[in-house]
Structure formats: structure tokens, C-alpha cells
Length: 194
Image: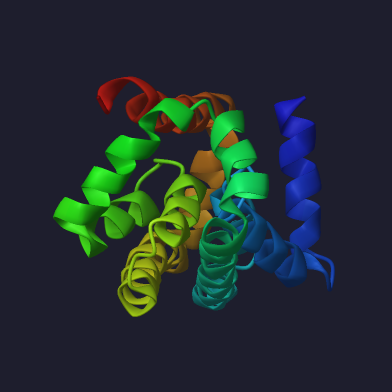
């Protein structure tokens, strides 16, 4: 099943809609959707390594705009929409602690959430709810999300064909590792944050 999904995702790289799908996935993931755009970024970049930096830019742009949308949700619609999203991820009891993180570390909180497997959308929504300085939020998001996606795109640009054969050979193990990292990101927020 994972191989079929991988093939389907790779199919987007051969259609005129691949970049739009990447932008949309990056946008949605930064504000409410659980699947990170890295999967499609990798798939598109592996098929066309020379365009991997372009894909990283598109992914970064979609993610940044999606983060702004998440901020807007928290700022204007926390009670009606934002709480439901935070509750969906099982993090409503961490809400006050996340506020403390923002008060202590400000931009670093957004930067770490933007670069790591920690669910970025939770931090975009809470940044708006806590009225974090929007310019600080925007700069930290732009740096962290771009660093994450350009790291992926840059590696594929440099090692494209070798990386593609590696991914195809070890796809099942890599898929499992990716899912584990994603789950660990949610667990880190849920259980490691007091």
C-alpha cells in the first residue's frame, strides 16, 4: 500500500499540478492538516532533482502563508475554530504551557516548532491566540520553515539520483521512520511539556 501511495505521490511530479499540490499541502499543514508537506516535496524533488530548490521555495511559501492563516485562526477564531484544532491534536491541556514558552522564548518557540517534527500548526494558532508580535512570528516562521525545506531540497539537488535509488530501496523502512518521527513530535508536545 505504501508503495502505491509513493507511486501516486510521484505521479504529481509528472503533472502540471504537482507544484500546486505541494503549495496547497504546505499551506494546509501549517494551519490545520496533519500530514507534513515533506513527503510530496521529497517525491517531486527526487523525480526532478534540478527543480528541488524551486520546490523548496514553493513549499516554504505555502507553509509561510499557511502559518499566517493559522495565526489568523488563533487571533480571530480561537474559541470557535482554534480550540477545536488544538483539541483534535489532544493538546488543549498544554495550552497554558505553550503561552509560557512564548513569553520566555518568543521567536525561538516558533523557530523550533517550524524546523522540527513538532506540529507547527499548534504553534501558529497559539501565536495568534496569544497575540505574539506578528513580525517576529513571520520572521521566525520564514527562517525555520525555509531552513527545513531548503535542507531537504538542497540534499536532493546535490545527491538526486543516488538519493532516489536509496529511497526506493529502503522505502518501507524510511516510511516507518517518518511516521515514527511524526508521532514522536506529537508525543513530545503531549507528554514532555508539563
